[in-house]
Image (cartoon, rainbow, N blue to C red; front, side, top):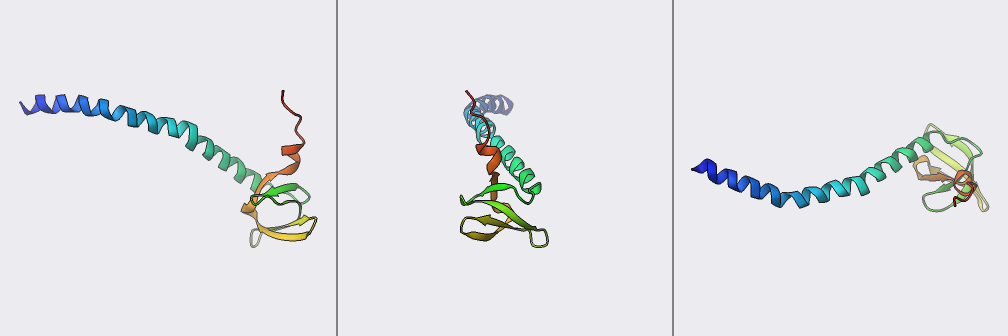
Length: 105
């Protein structure tokens, strides 16, 4: 008798949980997974930065890398106003690749 009651409740509770599971799957594929791939690309870019590369920081400052200090993981960027020292993780993207790509039609 108890087995019959548990079986009936099990199917109903599974069907009521299905929309929530579907929402979690949608969030994973449309929000979490693309963000993780973006972070991987950003870390790879930050690891291969070279002196002389034109970059944009996460705060929006444009400049050219003057020096790289691996001891304290900082980068000095030369801007129009002078030189500014940043953490390596503050570099967001390479300016030359982003803006010099031909427009896609």
